[in-house]
Picture (cartoon, rainbow, N blue to C red):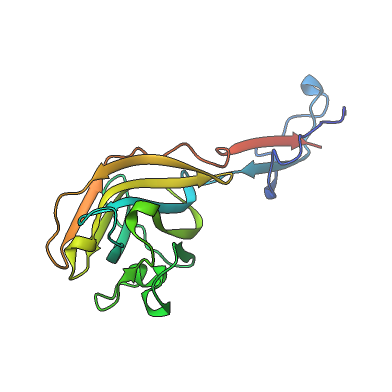
Length: 200
């Protein structure tokens, strides 16, 4: 049987090994009953690195950013839990105001940026696997002048940040939730499921 060349990275691990379901008599069409190996490569739609890039707070570009909670959503508005990964973001004023507290489901803690929003404040989550983000819910702190105003929802592909959608938020009241939708989940960063069957 002629050798088959498989480009590096084109296929993942073998996912099953089976004998043919309907044996074909040896010699018929030059085919005999042999083991069948099926290989697959797949990845969920979306990307694993997501962030908010905030360039203005409600009080203006000289104000820092304070956010009580962030929840990334899929295109249907369902929460994508921030578990198993790690929060990241611009330098906070201190360790108790770190990016992680914006993803802890605790209304008693809030992220507080060390720098003003005009410098470009980012805060996000590094998921353990690709997720198809289509929106975001944000909860303001008790000081709504520090809530985000001009925001871009971005994902990272090969180290390059790309904006999925952006918005200008209306005025918040203290500890108010606002939800923003408007993105179409991007194409998978991994190739879609590919099957290859080799008859040995």
